[in-house]
Image 1 (cartoon, rainbow, N blue to C red):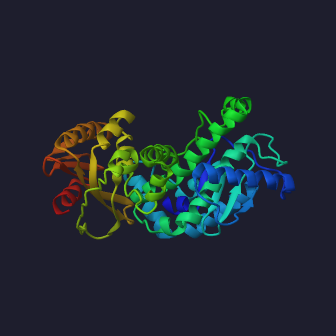
Image 2 (cartoon, rainbow, N blue to C red):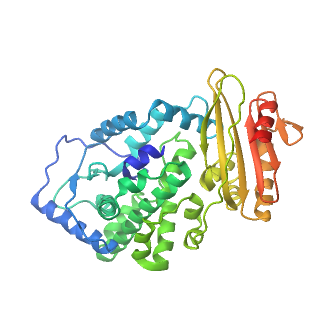
Image 3 (tube, rainbow, N blue to C red):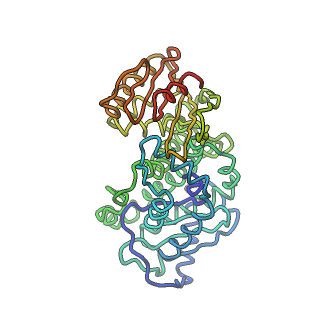
Length: 416
């Protein structure tokens, strides 16, 4: 999913957005002056100079749909779709019938309120407020979107976002890198909102009363993991950037682009980033599982995906607390296309023995919920269709494996 998230630095509005009717939008001199004022306000709030003019566009909803569909085709090649789809299925995030491309295209086309494209340097803002028209001043909601996207433009001018984002390849590190960028823009948007509240509190209250910014939900049927992936960089990224800002102002935030967060653990626990605490390096050798099996992934799962995985069977609070002791991991995912079967193994290192005990306790509840009719064979819990194994390596390290048969799960556990 990170390919599209990285390609567009976007802002989502999580309520149904009505399509604009006009195919062309006239921008008056008065509106241009208003936008110039917004540019200056963002520059002052963010304490970044404007180094170049930024092209502004106000696309229609159909423009966005067409763009997202084209971008999806370009960015999500067949192998990427296979890997991400099988990952989501393997960790119980979606059903085997899940269509990644269709779901993601629909989600973005329906929810995006604005985006900045670092490849072209163009920022796009949609008219999303009910009955909004483009006159001499943007409606308040569109002002907030504009501020968010213009912050991305300033980030790009100062920190070269394309290089910054393309330097990261692993999913967990990618989410962490994106959280800095989106959290930064969201904090500026929050500061601008406070500025608006001082100038026109009634207008801002009307916006909130319409539930345009609060109590919002994704479209029905959106997989929880996609919602979490899409929103985490904004909400948790905001808390992360606020922690940096408290520590050293915008200079501290600026410095993070040269020394970016490398794990979602650092985003969830900013004190670890500020202390320079890095993830524990873990490696796993590939395992030959036999005819038809291929290795699809060799990645770090990370605290974010670990908590989302746990949350498929245990309550949110338990999942968050159990994953919070994450210190490092490595995950290998295997796929058999002939059988449409998946297998995986994780070596997980927790920060302390107490963290390992807390995780193991939560994972035993997970197994009982996931395989309630299982038979216990050593470290494995097996049914006729699938097996989960959990092994203590030492007082802080565990191995978990999953496969259709106990022999394969055991093979992954013993040979990884």
